[in-house]
Image (cartoon, rainbow, N blue to C red; front, side, top):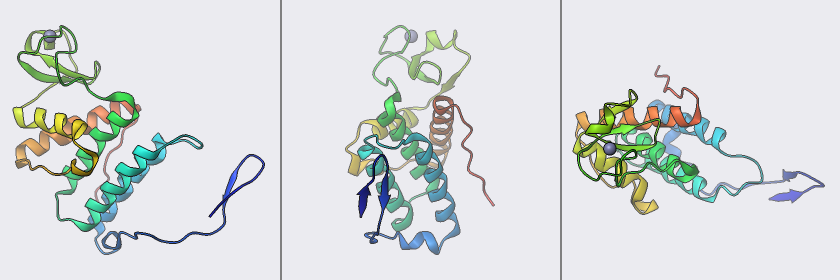
Length: 182
Ligand SMILES: [Zn+2]
């Protein structure tokens, strides 16, 4: 229950709708949930519409708590999707430098998107991509919000996807978000 004061709101009471019970019983799930909560805390500001961020946050918490999906996979999709929502949607349809649609084999953190083989030579901050990782980036940013976690990746591709998502988010938010494993 929110009450509006002269220039601030105060919360008078609240009721739990979904408590994500499994976060309390699994230390790994709790760790990943608190990791994304820290990020959410940094990208939201008071009195600004955060509807899409909230939706992504709740969907991700639900997936962490209630499914057996790989936790690195879940937060990597979360990070890529979040980047899109807050205005850093990567360009995935053409080379960010020369607009070519061929040989898009790298991801440029500086120029926000795919780069062709030729243009990669002039960019030191490019990460090489396999087809599976490319598709993961495309899917995470374009799929319907309820279906963003509905795909699978091999262990090797997941590792690559995890690196790209993590470094892209760190670069754009200008902060090192690293999961501190115990
Ligand atoms: Zn190019």
